[in-house]
Image: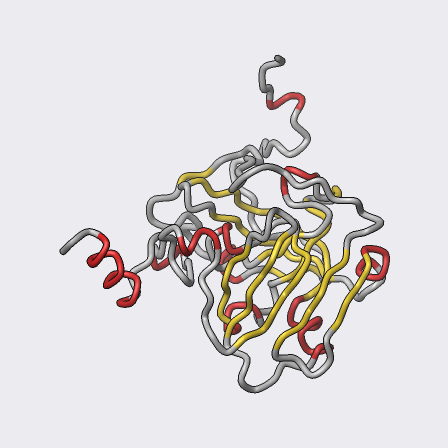
Length: 235
């Protein structure tokens, strides 16, 4: 087994800190990258591009992959990978915060604006949450609609100018810069809009339903969850 070396890692960041300067005009700059201190409490910066999974990396046939947008929408949508790549594109400069305490600053993502995509689907008034599903054994996460309609939220297939590899969620992953990274679901293949907040894989295990790193929302604190935990613990 070969040892890791920054010299052979194309994603290793050699600069002290990447600031949103000298970027092309078309790049959307995530608001948090303008903070004087870009690390939320409890986070530390990594220069690497770490890999973390809930389970194993799914085997995805790009020719068979599809993305579905359904639920509380007026026009359900479905795209093949070729069709997805033909949609209008955006670029986003954003930081990326993992709940395991590492943060990678100054990422350049490219893909399709989720706000645009949802406008094409026609979001119904009653839609309050999204269930984001991946190709990895039915994995899901729940995201409030209010977090999905920012200009810097996208379905990305490129990271720092290179196609997303399998380990990091390729062919397509969600990117929600203002939330902890588990909400930026990898291997996305479906988005369902709902009235109800339906906790996903990590949320059912005790992670927060929203996951705002600037509010230190790592673990669930909603009364229903706390009440269930108290009963389970015999309190």
